[in-house]
Length: 258
Ligand SMILES: C[S@@+](CC[C@H](N)C(=O)[O-])C[C@H]1O[C@@H](n2cnc3c(N)ncnc32)[C@H](O)[C@@H]1O
Image (cartoon, rainbow, N blue to C red; front, side, top):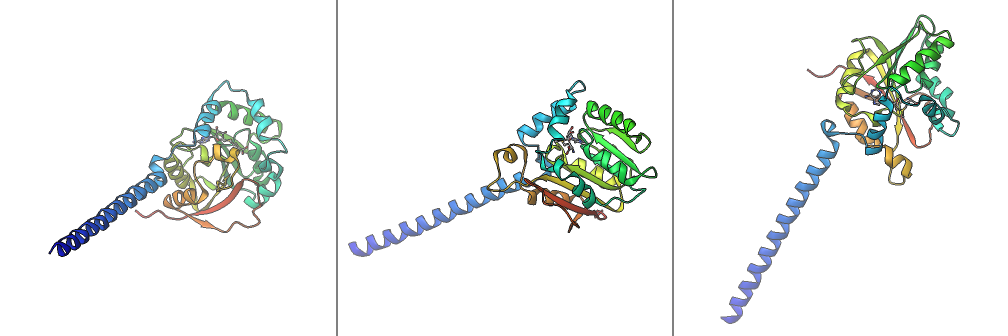
């Protein structure tokens, strides 16, 4: 009798342990899924602290632009060193309308102006009025003042007219977006049917350098999901150069489901 009781107690105890363990596993799984979902929700996204902090400096109307010219336009920056092959890969046609969103010092604005020619238009879009003044001055020096139009935008919108551009180009800008969902929606509106979105940005991987870790908000797969949710389809980029620390992504505007 004593044996039967202790066996019964042991079985009840191990059943309870199994049930408790299962409950803990379910709870942990639910918490893990909630954390992953929160991390991926575009609504909640903010740039990495360093990139967000930099936005204040970029938007400062009295910021030191020469300091940014040295930083963005140096051969040690691979995006700068490969600027010609990047411009070729973007593949603009004469007469195209393109938006260089987060144009900075206008490194690509200038090169795009040469590609689209006098029948085309390049919108240099930025949250920094100092950058835009610098770009307008540079465009004048190159005789591109009728091609380059500067646009001061906000974190909510690219401030471009609907259906006004063939290509939206973002170089090292996406990770600075404080409201990626709103920016992407406004870029989608600004693009003509069949328009292209090109994004070059930091490729965060397990073995990424501290430099990339400080700046990137998420791995590119997360960005790609946000971009797809905004009505874009990833396509294979033609002749895209390999750029150290960065990925080159090309997307087609597709109709958004109502
Ligand atoms: C790292 S810089 C890149 C500049 C330039 N594209 C280049 O590659 O040389 C990032 C730029 O994005 C701009 N920026 C940040 N948030 C923006 C937003 N929501 N819309 C437009 N520009 C933005 C900043 O002012 C800054 O000029």
